[in-house]
Image 1 (tube, one colour):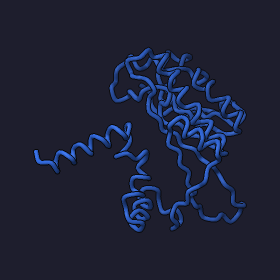
Image 2 (spheres, helix red, strand yellow; image 1 turned 45 degrees about the horizontal axis):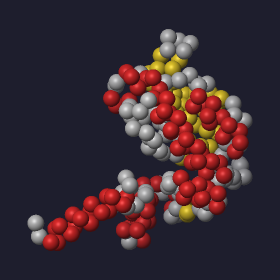
Image 3 (tube, one colour; image 1 turned 30 degrees about the horizontal axis):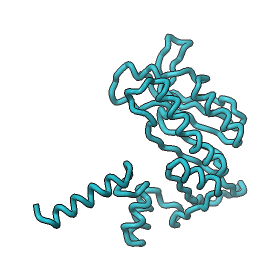
Length: 221
């Protein structure tokens, strides 16, 4: 192996060590593209990824200091953008702040299931606090956020993570909804205890008063 090839491989290995699971050292695809594409190309790629946005480039939003501090202290990526909307004819314009959370698991899938769920709760707590302190009106969590995403395995043991609509995941989120006056969309693996413990892929809608507004069931398992 020549020295050039060896140095290239060593650099790749170094980048992998430093990145801690990120993309070539970047903590998001957006930042990777922005730093490595020419401005006009980045603008076009962003348009394709995020939509036309009324023909305008996305504007970044400066977040409150508390949200940025939580991001730095707990090691999660935090970004905010302004999307334009066509002006309505019969209603005054208003701003709706939507928060989206995507997270990885917090413990290995070999850990006790109760410990895995608690670790995910602990991981999401500061992220939800950051969203709330940023004035988010509607917060959307990822599908089956309270467990490893195991639907593709079809292994029945993962159904142990299933819980009723009013279970511990909903209870965990209700205080945040009430505290920050925001609606939370919480997709969970639901166990319907009233109908033979059928398992559903359910989105629970928690109102801004901490109440359960309703639920949407997508599919049974």
